Image (tube, rainbow, N blue to C red; front, side, top):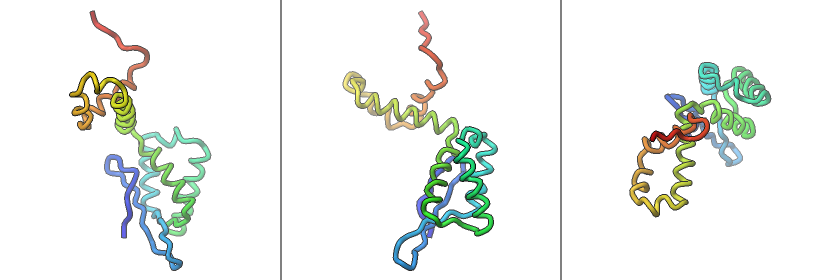
Length: 146
């Protein structure tokens, strides 16, 4: 039975399968195919270069181990792979959306919604949230036209 997926980004899904252990606890399992597809995506988009050396080493070791055994069921290692998967799948659009969400939260908690009630309706639109995140491209202050 397939569990929840995470790391979704442009067709990439890292599946975590849940197996019932004889002792009654639930174990998460990550397959070799999922780790390999994440490895290839990370090499293509260059996100592995941005990872710290220790995380790259852990991921390579997990890849070799999964190739030999077929799957990984160690909860600690599955947790580490989840963390790396989240960082590997973070492309430009996802970073912009996260930045836009942070700005939207700040706007909702500030005076902006009290002064402009229509802004609250805009927060439901994903396009607006993405647009809010585009200011990560602007280095410095805004340029005002006169």
